[in-house]
Length: 125
Length: 125
DNA sequence: CTGATAATGATAATACAATATCATATTAGC
DNA sequence: GCTAATATGATATTGTATTATCATTATCAG
Image (cartoon, rainbow over all chains, first blue to last red; front, side, top):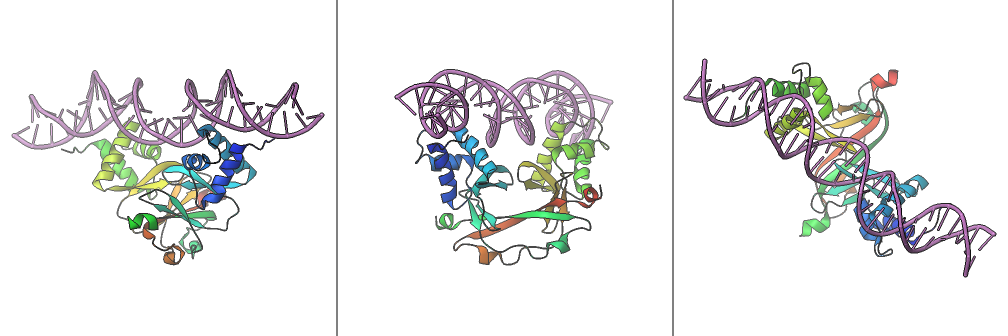
């Protein structure tokens, strides 16, 4: 049976409160407050557990390890800051006429958009 | 000085003629016709060379190694078939009003779209 | 044609994220 | 509180893509 450990609580909490997708190391760092001494193996283990439980979902990124965000959000896309390398959540604005761009016979199941740029915090510096 | 070898010609040719982005192993396979005995190390070396020369460009994909396509194409996006795992090039159709979706202070430099689905060839089977 | 040297192929080495191992600690049903 | 079983932390191991090594081959300027 699944146990309720302080580490697991801290990890779930960190991801849910982040407001943006976190990588494994970011999760580790963000969870250290609530769970001092937390190890990276536990982070990976619990990410897997939380994924299976449907509590969080994976954000796959080109060329780098996946990040994780709270599950159940509305359809949205992501923004990656080239400076700090943080990934932010973008609301709304989606693709218009995908069908027109598709070759005949191709079926679409999903899509993802990644916007590159510099975030507000990094722009100031 | 840069030499003109049959291997390099074969590799450039394979990428330019593919019509879709190829991964390193796909490049190897596609180049074997023109350059029998070609080794994977040479493929990687020449991909690097061709990238620096601006002859090809990299297509980064979430969770898998990059593919490479001929450089200088118009802005476009990509489609990945879940069955055969090939990546295809999509023309036209782009994002509408990105600005509205952006938080204040964020600057955009580029974006990429990846469409997931099943290609025509795999749909038939 | 020939020599200097860039390029190649086979394979060892590297880099890195993620997983497995294992001794110890923690949880929760009784 | 006690005990069986899950969870943890430290670290070794794995898996995979890419790069380095090095002896040999091929290119091309003169």
